[in-house]
Image 1 (tube, rainbow, N blue to C red):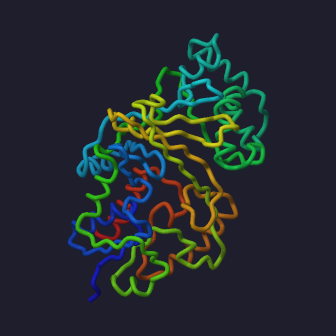
Image 2 (image 1 turned 135 degrees about the vertical axis):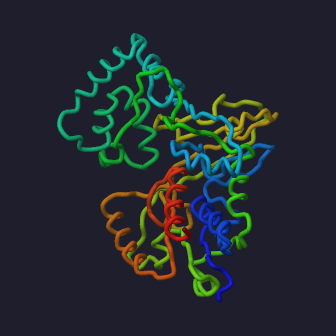
Image 3 (image 1 turned 90 degrees about the vertical axis):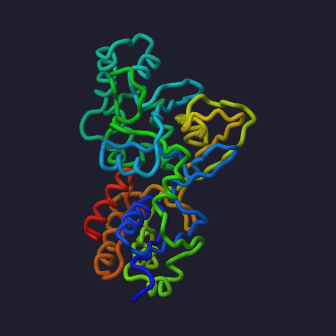
Length: 367
């Protein structure tokens, strides 16, 4: 008999959801995490009494009642509604693109019919199949919105000119012909009261935890401890990059404490011009309606991913998908290792979709 039923590699939301279910079933779990804390990218650091989203803004939203009931059984959520704004050279626009955006951009546009006509007129400039991201975006939202609110932000995000990026990166851009600044259409959204660490602590309650440990450097040791391994890290690193490295885009964050109560009046401001080096500025206290005397802001800079940096966004082009498929075929041959989560699946997941994916594994593995 081994000491643990499951050795869980990684301390993020997928791992936590599985750990919670396994513990409830009487399974003994050891969690091995590279970082000095659990929580993955939803980890919060308290600064000046404010829960700072250390790895970027995370707003929980879902239309899945089972997921919503699950997280609310662990922590109470507030009523935060994501209503970011865009700053283009000092011009402020509401996001997502809606009637408030259109009436600000075109002073003679007041009604949905007028907005539709203006966008349709500009979209018509693209004929045939869009050849790149620029043409794709114009074919979806027209030239004015593209130039002010899409182009610069996207080029910073991907580190390349929109004309050099493939069209498939933008499959759709949400356009609403209502005066509604709610970014998500989901039935439920909010932020855990007390920050995401409250949720994370509840998910991993009852597990043994080892932090600051790289499982891939100690595989034999940890494999010997558990009947099974649930691996939620990067798939290529599990196989020592034998076929080559999967590519990602990464992020760099600069946080600053300001001696003022309210810096920008909203949690998220997107800087959509090309010249501003960062893509977003986050003011964390607004996620929880904070009334602290000071505030904490974070500037978010996109970056090319290199070994040692956090892998945020998989580059799901043909080369990388073919490479991932080769690693996936190796993973399918493993007898006592289960793979799951955004890194192991090389897929960008919203938080609710991470939990849904974990539910599917729980159904297969534990029920």
